[in-house]
Image 1 (tube, rainbow over the protein chains, first blue to last red):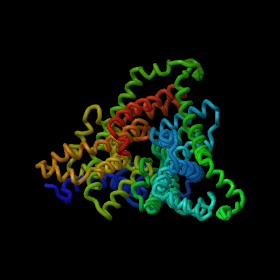
Image 2: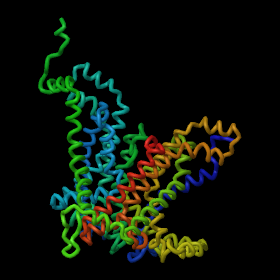
Image 3: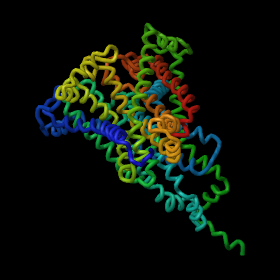
Image 4: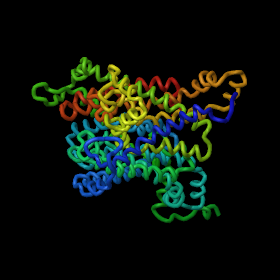
Length: 268
Length: 312
């Protein structure tokens, strides 16, 4: 009765499930070329390339794009430093409160974004902190730490403690061991974590709406266009840019951590 | 002779290394303090501010936040219209979780049991890409699909299944003018967006079901359906529960999807957003934000009892 061949029904259901996950995105691409700008008519009455030029010349797109890049870069850098530090500590030793710390790191991403956002908003209100680029970065860096941490801690786990001892036995001090042994081994995991953190920050919208004040990042710009559409195909062009800016880092991260495929993004 | 084995100190780096070697706790403290100060101050501090804010109230006449301890704001949550919001959100979260579990199972099961080599990588990437790729772009794609003039209506017309589509839309309570303005639409998009979060823990749990047990079950005369029911399902359950933590929690707090797709009926996330924004009622928004935390704490306690944390 039991065989190693999958039953046909299961194959079909699995394939249908994967298609369900991927086909919708293709429509984003199709609608960027439609000549119809007032509705989402299918099939598109005609195809045109003009929306790419229109999007390029729209002055309201560039500042959000710039802001998003800026926020994602700084938030990723902060998350890289904090995430690496905490993963090094957690990998090295067992100590009191270890479980609680791993819960604390996970919490900003395990709780719904609206809670993180509302919590930050309350804190800014209680402490009378005015909104700025830095309030956005503060939120983003907080939920990006866990991404870097997950990647780094998985690599630490695979790294044999022996090579650190060997380095010490050969006369290297902590800093030399870090520079010549730890960093080269950790590098690709950190890069992968950084890539994922960047992707996450670049398209984050829920926490950002609570911490941004008057500024808009690219996802906030997109959200406004979704609620009150103007030139619909232009939104599609921007959506393609956002999609590319998240998918490319994910693919790079995947190839960087392929050996330990099961660890790459476990528990976003 | 013994002193010759000790290398001479070459500067501050060596000296610090020696200190770390003698006091391993010192290095630990140095490594841990920056991230803990950040998370403790920024995150826990904010959560504390959220709690604090929820115990304040708003002056009904001036609209100014009164900074005095009161339970008045929490009492407001129990008004009929606010209870409605909470109930609607919890029902939707439950339905989405079930929907995700049903669609995720075949994918997770195939990937865990039958996919090998390149197929395994394809399945992995096929789930990871939608998991990480832009949330907003995915929601937007569904606005295009579900629109009245969109691809689904077109497909229904060309396959002669318009009757089914119209029938579904005519259902009281969950139907609507078009899919993009009906609760069914909201449900579909939620299921789509959170599906990968269900697949991954499910697959991890299924991979740990030993093949020998399936063989034993077959040897003892069980058919496919029976093996599935009495061997695979109980063993995979912790994975399903682990996945449901994500789908349930994410649906509870989301406010973008119901805003873009569905009726204008409010969900908890949307209520939080509107109370803190246009309504300017920060205390009530904070109290509303505490609701999903409370629900999730109960949910996590149950999940823990069912062994979901071992499957994460």
